[in-house]
Each structure stands twice: as structure tokens, then as C-alpha cells.
Length: 261
Length: 246
Ligand SMILES: Nc1ncnc2c1ncn2[C@@H]1O[C@H](COP(=O)(O)OP(=O)(O)OP(=O)(O)O)[C@@H](O)[C@H]1O
Ligand SMILES: [Mg+2]
Image (cartoon, rainbow over all chains, first blue to last red; front, side, top):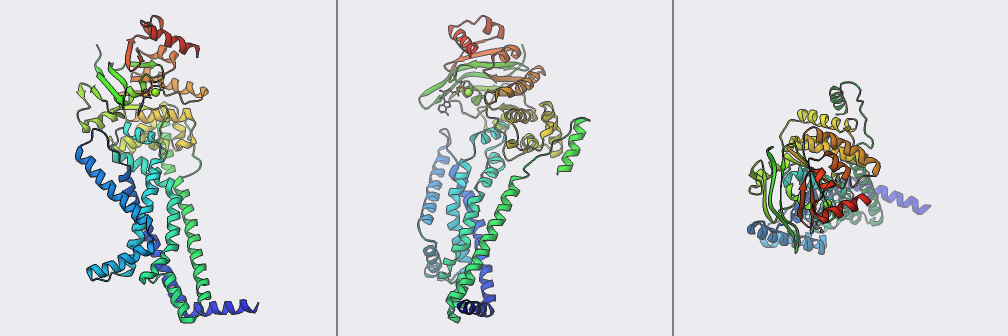
């Protein structure tokens, strides 16, 4: 009981002295996670689409060659970034640019770049899987009403693929929220970095990290809830309205259309 | 003689080592209803998919109103928009409502404005008896309802000709009737139709011509009376006898 009281007073002390810097750190963690995940998703969509382009036998030789080279580069990108720790990638980028170009990039920019590229490597495979999971008939039906390849992809296949991969995207988001802590090694003053500083200054390491733990949990828990909501929104209403058809059907339908818009 | 809409000359399709279509020749004229029958694996679907450019023919020509559509890629999209296809598995766009399924092609391919597209779509959804379900997503519809929406989607493009690949084969027996009824009405309305089907009664009743395919060639191409009552080839007779016993 006594222990608990001292624990709580320690937590209160850390919070009073360093609460605002912990909140600043939290903001940076959120920033890195959001921008990194969205940029990563964009990279993933782009790479995923390119990786699902198939060559036909009668395609032009140049197209085949270009696609082969691009695919090789993309495969290398995915493999390299998935096979090395993000912490090491961050060190390489941050100190590498310093050593090679003699410039010190802003640590937060470096962090966002690393998280984006890293997430992109995972997202590429997620998006590719999502596209491949869509029944070929969807594309064929789009083709059969005269859509071009890009229309069929952007209007029919991708929206369905993106909906299907939302849980996996949410997962990446949560992982980024937590794993951004490794970026403290390149002096990004995100939550983990700020917690360490607070712990070092107060010698209340356990208490400081207890606070960090709670903040991380609240962040990821909120994100999970928001993502569920987004998924439900993407699914649209569970039921549909049946429209009457007794009177002049055309007028009737138009009225109903307006109502539902 | 009526004006030919689709003319196929020396069409060949090879998958790897397999010659699935060997020298297919035939013509569909304006307003004609042609049924294609034949045993499984004879190449009926492949023929339809070649006509709709879902497969690239290995050799041969496909003329649409006298123009070879295998020659130019640009013309081929216009052609696809004007020759519709109804699939065995419906293939409704799962991310769109019934109405949107019928408007998206009009808006994106035919470049109509949304209101106009919705009016056209509503009319065709009404024609197939699906006007009550304009806001339903495909997963909320039964098989027969999906296929009727799929027919409305194809009709909304106001096609010159419509291809059907076994449109009732994936349906529960009690839903076959509602789809066949829609198709019969379309046939009567003068739409040019090319229908792959195992529904012999339907082929007999509505078609102007019946084409019997066997092993990648057209073995017989004649009036339904001739094909069903007086087939010239033993293969045709066997096939008809087998399908009657089913
Ligand atoms: N993409 C493909 N690759 C290789 N072989 C194929 C392909 N599509 C079809 N085939 C082969 O071509 C032959 C003809 O197929 P097709 O689907 O045209 O037959 P069908 O007459 O429509 O038969 P069913 O009545 O069963 O639908 C079959 O032997 C099939 O295995
Ligand atoms: Mg078939």
C-alpha cells in the first residue's frame, strides 16, 4: 500500500515536471505514425499496382524490358527493407547522409522518410495480395463495358482491394505507432526519447515509462477504434431501401434517388 | 439479307499447346438471336471471350460493321462498349450498388452526365424487374436478381449486340425462369444476341439460328428446326440425345 502511494507520487512528480514534454513527444509519435503510414500506403499502392501488371506475349519488347527492370528494382526494394531492422535503416540514412553529403538532415524528416519507405515495403505486398484476391471477373466485366485498364483498376479493382486490406493497413498503423520508438536512436524527440530524458533527469525510470506505457496504449487503442469505424463506413449501410413501383415508375425512382443521396 | 454486325473469319485460339478454336467462321446479323450449343470444352466460352476481346485471338479477323477491330486498340474499347457481355458468374461490381453498376460505364466510357445515365439505368433496371433494388449492393441480392442487374448493366450501354455465356448455369433451378424470361423479352424486342446455353428449350424457342460447336470448330450452323429435328452430323445427334436425357 505504501509502495503504491510512493509510486503514484513518483508518477505525479514526473508528470508535473515533464508532462508537457511527454505530450510533445506524443505529438511527434502520432505525426510520424500517421504520415509514415499514409505515405507508406501510397508507396505500397504504387508498387503493388506495378507488380500486378502482367505482360502479354504480343506486347512490345521495350515494354517487357522496362517492366522487367522495374520489377527487379521493386523486388530488391521490398526484400532489402523487409530484411533489415528499421533501427539500422534509420542509422544508415541519418549518419550516411551526414557522412556522404556533409549535411545533417532534420531528424524528424529522416524519421518520416524511413518509416514511409519501410512501411511501403510491407504495404506493397499487402496491396499486391489485395489486388490478387479480387475475382478476375470484376476486371473482365469492367473490360466488357469498354473500360480501359486504368479505369478498371481505379474504379473497380482497387476500391475493393483497399477495402479488403484495411485490417492489414490498420495493423501497420499500430505497428508504426509503437515502433517509431526505435527512431530515438537518431535523436528524434518522440515519446520514447522524451520519456528517456525525463527518466534520466528524475531518476524515476520506472515511473516515467509507466506513463509512456499508458500513453502508447491509449494511442493504439484509439487508432483501433477509429479504423473499425472507417471500415464500417466503407461497407455502407447493411440494408437497402426497397422502392415502390406503383405510380409512374420513372418519377418515383428519381424522387427516391434524391432522398437517398 | 440483314446487315452483319459481327463477322468472324478464320478465328483461331491456341492456349499453350492446345488448339481450342480451329478456324471458326460465322456472322451475326442485326436483330438476330444466335444460340451456341455444344459439349463442355468445345470452345464456346473461348469463342465468346475472343469476340469480347477478353482473349486475344491467335489468328483470324473479327469485323464489327465491316471494321477489323483487332487492328486498333483505340477502336477496341469503343467496340467493347458496344458489344456487351453477360457472364455465368454475373460479375457485378461488388463495390457499387445496382444503380451504380448500370451508370458507371455510361459515365466513364460513354461520357454521359450522371442524371442522364441514371434515367437510362433506371429504365433498364425496370425492364428486368429490378427497379426496387436500385440501392442494393450485389451481396444483398440473390443469384437471379444479380443476373438481371447484370443484364441491365449491359443494356445500359445501349449495345449493338449482347453476348451471353451460360447466363443461367450458376443459378438455382427456381431462379432460371426469371432470367430466361427477361432474355426472351429481349429477343423479341429485336436485340442482337449471341447466347451460349445448355437450355435447349430456350434455344429452340427463341433463336433464329443455332450453332453447334464441337472440338473447336462449328460443325453445324442452321435454323433451330433443322438442328433439333434433322441434324446432319452424328456428333450433333449424340449431343442432343445426351442433353435430353439430363
Ligand atoms: N485460359 C486458358 N488456358 C488454357 N486452356 C484454356 C483456357 N481457357 C480455356 N481453356 C481450354 O479450352 C478448352 C475450351 O474451353 P471453353 O471454356 O471455351 O469450353 P466451353 O465450350 O465453354 O465449355 P463449358 O460448356 O464447360 O463452359 C477447354 O479444354 C479448356 O480447358
Ligand atoms: Mg463455357
